Length: 254
Length: 254
DNA sequence: AATGCCTGTTGCACAGATTGCAACAGAGCT
DNA sequence: AGCTCTGTTGCAATCTGTGCAACAGGCATT
Picture 1 (cartoon, chains in turn green, purple, cyan, red):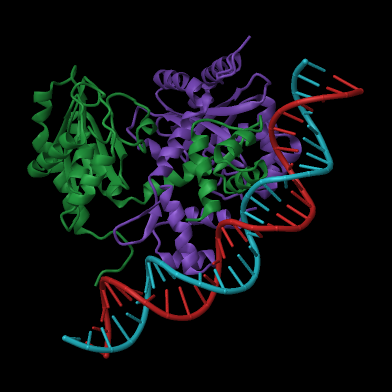
Picture 2 (picture 1 turned 135 degrees about the vertical axis):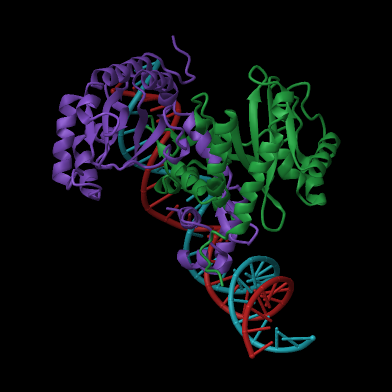
């Protein structure tokens, strides 16, 4: 809607691919070098891009700080976290929390005490939306037309032979998931990894988040993982209860 | 430099404080509501802001993805990570990696296997620049005028009685740190936490990053922590060697 | 139940900011 | 030393962004 801002913001994903110099940025934006320079300057003043010693531009530090603060005012995450930790303690597996936003599903929390994994390599990363158990739950709850439109807009990469192959198959899966109130991903993303997931609902019953437990086949088989389903659902329900019970925004209640 | 972009970007830190509606955004920007609306729309199209169900705006998902990719392009981090893990395994304490950028120091990696801490609560967060051991190392290496200018621009909050109190004291500390080639923070940020840090240098000898080991007093005293110094320095030197040995950019070598 | 207020949204004309050009500067390389 | 390449600045034309005012829709109040 605003050309200048649009151009400026287009620089960010471009730089996300790697550092670039002025000429490259100008070319890929399709604007004059001087224009690109001015946009980059403005981005720089706000700390969103950084000019490294070789004069090339790169994404800047403020971006981290913003993403940081953004994740910190997601109230679902705050409420859910202790529950995730407790679940992790009792089963030992990786626990994820994810939300849906504008056609993307992303992890907003993760607990994995067994292996010291680099946590930031996951949080914030968009999820494999067509196969992940949490994605199924979040999308299954969308209103019919929106869900259909999204399903048909998606790509269906065959990560493994068990990946969801097409929009119709995906929509069928979503119907099933909505019906049963939980979801799985059995080797659909990575051959040897299975997940079980359950939805977190707000006061109005809408799904606001989804949580999952993941484990590699070598640790527990799919059957064994499924025995955790009741525990996962109970945890999700506990979060739902707490989330819809309180209104943690600052508006004073009656 | 570019008014429109400047205004649009000013919205981001504003929303970082918490969700806001159109009117609030317009007020705080000092522009007409319609203008704010258009800016927000553009930000929305790029996924940087998200409109939640109550119509208020909040920072968006793309921000995570960008910060994500940004951190993945930092080659120091990639090289350093295994070393940090190894150091953590041998001493058991929290290990940090930090870089300096435009007057800010921020953590870009952290390993803490003992306590399952929420990792993202730190990575990307600006460091207490006047007291942190890693900050001292990074700033001590700046050219004299720049260092002086920065030191005088900073605030010197007294987190504890041992915090750096003023610019002159800070500059003196930086001189000492540069001299000895390592740094400490003994309860300067939080009363009961001590850190030892060492610099990572590029091929030209400039400090490109700094790493530290932190531990609370109740686990090991300051004296005991200092016995780790040789190990920390060796680790940092190992990273420096590997970092300056390779040029991991795509420019083909001879 | 109807009214009034408040928030978000659109069309339009003006003003002013942004754009591309061309000329300049400075570094790095042949 | 000359050359080219990249980054940088001043300027005028114009296109874009801005604020205004009117509209729409929802919520709470009368």
